[in-house]
Structures are given as C-alpha cells and as structure tokens.
Length: 596
DNA sequence: GCCGTTTTCGGCCCGACTGTTTTCAGTCG
Image (cartoon, rainbow, N blue to C red; front, top):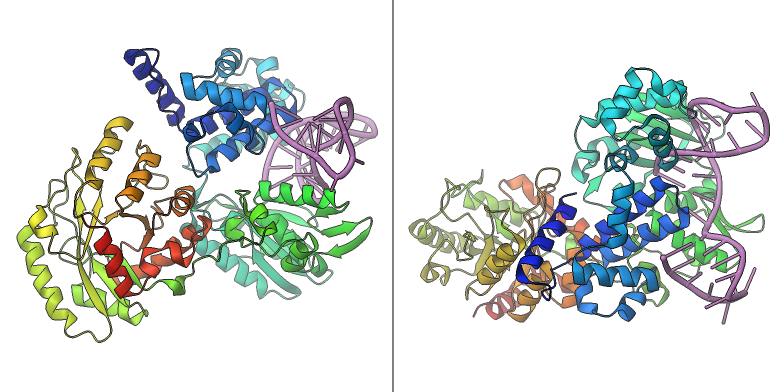
C-alpha cells in the first residue's frame, strides 16, 4: 500500500518537472502494481490463468537482482520468464509514465476495500465477488455489519461454518501482523517437532515451509510427519502442550492453532513419500510448480507422495532421490524461491553457500562504552571462545538521539584501551572501529581526524528515515563519498513488523559501493536482517562484498550471526562474497582498499 | 496472459479439507 502511494508521489514530482522527466519507478513498484492487477482481476472473475500470469510476473520482477530501468527495452522485458509482449508493454508504460492505465481502469470498477477482504482466510475471489454483488459489501466494516445483522446467512455459499470462520478472522485481524520474525517462531517449531518425534509410532518429523527455507518472517508452520499405521494425527496433536485447538482435522492433514496464535499445518505421509512430501511442503509454491512442470515434460507426475511414471513410484523416499530423478542435484531449501536455482542446478552452477563456520570475525560489536551491556574485554573473550579470530568494536558516535555515544575523546580513549587489550589476547585481534551516524545531510557525525585512526568505519542511518527517496539516496551517496567509510550498516533501516525500509534507490547505492569500493552490511539482528535476500543476491552479482554482522550488544548476541548466515544463503552468497569470511590479513587489505 | 522436443491453440501443478451445492465448488498450501 505504501509503495503504491509512493508511485503517486513520484507522479506528482514528474509532472512538476515536466512531461519529459521520467519518474524513478522501482522493480518493487512494478511488482506491486502487478499484484494489485491480479487481485482486482480475480475479484472481477477474470480468467484464473490470467490472474496467475500477473502474480507470476510480480514475483519475477520482485526477484530481479537488477533494476528494470537498466534493461530499458520492451524486448529485454519480454525476454524475462513469464513476461510476454503484453506485460513487457505494461512494464514499459510504468517505467515511462509512473502509471498503468489498465490498473486505473480496474480500480474504478472494483471497490478498494474488496482487496482487503481477499486477505481474510476463507474468502477467495468467488466469495468476495458474491459479497459485493449480493450484499453490496465494499470492505471489512461492511462485512462485519452483514455478519452481525444476519444478512450474510441469506447468501449462497455462506453457511454457518464459513460465517464462523469469518467472524474469527475479523476478530484476529486486530491482533497484529500475520507474519512474524523467523526467530520468534523457533521455540514453537522446535518444541512441536521434538515432542512429536518422541511420540510413540512416529518415525520422522521435519519442519518444512518458509521456516525451513529460512525466510526472514514466518506465517504458518508446516510439518511433515511419518508414522506407523494406526497413528491418529489429530489425537496426537491434541495432547501437545503448545496446541490450543485444531482448526482442521483429516486423516492425513491437520491444522493446529498454537498458543501464540500461529497455525501449524501437519501432513502425515508414508515413509516412502517422506522426501517428496518434504520437497512439497518446503516449497516455495513457485519452485514446486516449476518442478512439476519439469516432471510433466518427462511424462512423469510429481505430487507429495512421490514422482510417478504411470502408477509406478520412481522416487520419493528422500529429497536427493527425487531431485536426481528429475535430473537435478539437491537444491538447498534457502534457494527454493524460483529465482533461477533450478536453471543453475541444471547447469551445475549452484553456489556453494556460505556457512556459519566460514565466518572469521564480526565487524559490528558494541560495548558498555555506548549502549552495549558487556565490557570491551568480555565481548572480545566471548568472540574468541566462539572460535572467531577478530572482532571490530563499533560503538555509536555521540549525537542527538543516541545518549550514550562516544565523542572523539571517548573514542580516542577506547583506541588506547583496545591497544592494551590486544597485547593480552593470544591469537585474537580486536579491531578499532565505530558505528558513526550518517547525519541528515549525509555527513558523518565524527571528524575525519579521529576516523583516520580506526581500522574500520561502519556508518549507519539512525534517524530521518522518512526523507523522500531522492533526498535519502543523495544522503547515502554523500556518506559513501567520505574517504574513511568502509561499511554501510543496515542499509534499508527496516525493522520487521515495525518500520518499513526507507525510500532509497538501492541500485544507485550498490553502484556507488562497487565503484568506490566499500562494503555493505547484512545486519544479523533477527528483527533487522537488513539487507534482505534479494539485496544480497544483487550485491553478489555486482561484486560488492557483504559484511555479515551480529551488531551484538551482549556476549550471547553473537548467536545472531546464524540468522545473518541464513539470510546470506537465501541471497546465494558464498564464502568468497563475504567480507568477514576472510582471514585477518586479507580483511585488512580489503579495508585498506576501501579507504580513500 | 504466457508458452511451445506432443502445441502458435489449448493447455496452464496438484491434492486435502470444509461446508453445504446431494456430487462438488471454494479455498488453501
């Protein structure tokens, strides 16, 4: 929604500048427009395959590592998978005018509140259309009234079950975001998995879904269960402590409502189908669709029970066996987003993804000198105990808004402290650094004279997140021109579920980082995970090294590095793409290169 | 709306569960 409004904003800017000036339209804007087209067409009752084509195009555009604007021509758009002549023309129109006539026409025909209704569980395009046609329902509030007045019961397709589901959904809507950070799902996912594994008759339990793919946020949990005959899945679930109720219960499939409000979908499959079920329920949907089409072309049929030639199962017990039968190597779950992984697998070009063990150090660590909770020495010893070879202390600079930051004097004292500590740490190095604030005008909050004395200068935005895109981009580009800057930290400023990424022309930032050169941080705090996966993939393609950083404020927060690794893997990063996967000597060379 | 080693037209991934429509449509993943 915010994005769409932003297109409007750009449109105004364009008209002020004159007709010849093209508004800056990002891939995300195009994807959002296509998503909206798909929903409005679906509500209208249009051909479902046409709807699907828009959805697919949105996904393709959203996953492109480069801005569409760089591709320029309609022919180049047309060459993208899932984009034909028509959609290529629509991309062209959006890029040049900032608007889409077809979308504007649709918006005039379909009340905007109906799109919101589509998000409610139990409401698809058919029922939303029926609500509008039968009861003039135009949004959630109308639906609430129709429910309470009893008018809904007169409508075909809205029996007591559906009405109960809708009442529940409207009540739940007030309860906050549907997706939550990956890390907040972990305790529930793991305890459910472990207690089911311990249940008698159960032979195998795996968590699948977006949780297994390591997405930054998780909606529902998906679990694949194998058990001996006679095991009653629903009865088993009702005995689990974390399970509040069952929203659906069949012999092979159950949906449990957990105490934290999450849903867990469980599927019971025979052991010979464990691999195919795991592929199936790990997804993503688009990865699966592509696998099934691949199966079809080989005159095979793929479903959650296996890969079949006629009625004969030819694979399915393990994932590896299944991919092999489709002529592919096993594909890591983090890559299964239909962003080119199947094509890469086919050509033997899957990246060897970075792992936690590849990290040699951590370049963003706080201490009690600013807002951290542990001393310099404690943070250093904790990192050494984890097997890291170096850390960079990057406490905040002092300025308005950050109370406990360091000024030049404080930083100078910390430099001395680090020198003396380094004498006592055998085989471990503490690098001198800072997380210096990027001020509203793009200057840095500390003088160059003190920054010159540091090994690592990490710079970040901590305020003025809502500047218009042109100003925000200019601000960051100016910061990147500072001769001492090494790493741009948490580039988008997003906080999952709390703060949207700031409006920033990330392609320009990436190009500037590459040209300078300097590095970009993938902040591993579970609520940040900033950069996101697509930005990481883009950095890799552009050859910009990524610093996977814990931003630890306490000894135990080095654990967050695992979240960063997960995100990095989703962004196709290998060891070679990661700045702090380099040994100290090589790291120092990289840092020296990034100083003008 | 896209796409092509069965195809430029006629397909488009596949199955489970729910509710209600007494034989299946709608939704979901």
